[in-house]
Length: 142
Image: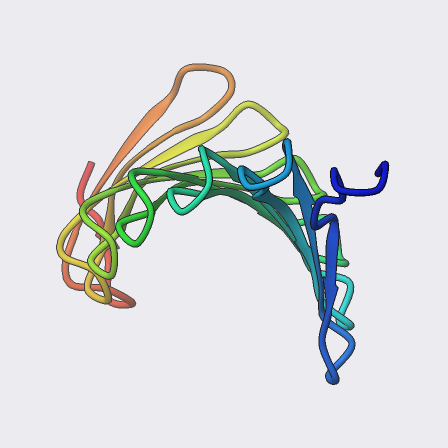
């Protein structure tokens, strides 16, 4: 910027990570963080309150977050193959509740994080299958 109006726009770290900022001098806020792995994180919010809203991985996977800074929780993951997973729960306790696939089928899950299990699957043609049993041991019941 002009002399006396310079503002902070980018921070570069020894490990190759770069942070990008926008805003007027004294009110710069982080908007993007790029990692050497190809991961890019996007932020929204004013200076000091920037919250993570999306994280994109090099393989095309995108994680979406909601919540205030420091309490961002995963709400959705989109994969390059068209699968979308939905999550509920507070930060650190998110659990998958539904997965939608490119072919139109949907799987529904119940249970706490790490123990979530499929309870119902709906095919694209509308056929529904119900499951019982713990994670990894689900069995078709009807």
